[in-house]
Length: 279
Image (cartoon, rainbow, N blue to C red; front, side, top):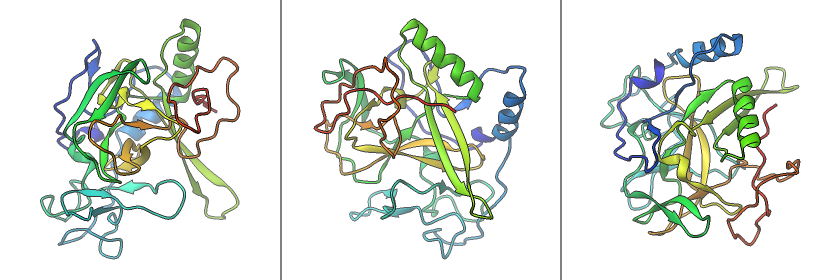
C-alpha cells in the first residue's frame, strides 16, 4: 500500500466513536471498473526521485523542492506563498530520494499533523471544532484531511444517503487542473475523501467564508494526493481553525435549494454552506 511506507506521528484521538486513521485510506472494496482504477492508482508508486546531497531547498537544486521555506524565526517550515491565486501542487521528497531525511527541507506533511491542536465545543458553530493552543505562522502545515478515498460513484451514493437521512456531510472534493500538451483544454484530476466513518482530527475543522486556513494537494510517493490544510495567515492561540469547504475559488453559485445555513458569522458570509458538486 503506497501511502503507508512513511512513518506518521499522530497522537490525536477521536472524541467520537469513529475509527481514527493516521492518513487517508482506500474505501472498502467493490466490484467496479472505477474502483479497480482507483485501487491501481492508490497502490502505485511515484518513482521520480531527487538526487540532492543537501537540503532540497529550491527548484534549482531539487526536482521536488521549492514549495517550503523556513518562517522568519527559523523555527519551522511553512508553505511558500505565491502571488498566483490558489496554491501550487506540492511534491515532497520520499524514501526513493537521495537526500538525507534529517537535512531535507522538502519533507513536512509526511511527518503528521502539528502539535498543540485540540478538539473543543465551538459556540460559533454549535458543534465540535478545532482550535490551536499556540500561535501558528502563515503557511504552516495543520493536518491532512484524512478519510476514505472514494470513487465518484461511491461519493454520489453517500451524498444521496446523507441528504435523504439529513446527516452531516463530510465528503470533500479536490479538483486539480493541468493543461494538456496542445494547451487546448485542461485535464482534471478528482480526489474525493470522506472522513465520516474513518478519519483524523481534520474532520472537526469547520467551514468559514473568511477562513484562516486553506487546502492544498500534496504528493509524497503516491499519484493520489493528500488533501492538506495549511494556515492562510498568522493564527493566534485559542483561535478556531477553519477552511472554505468550496475550495480556493469560494464560489457560491449553483447552490442546492435545500443548502444548509452557514454559521461562520463572517462579514462576507454567503449565508449557506458550499454545495458539494461531483460531476
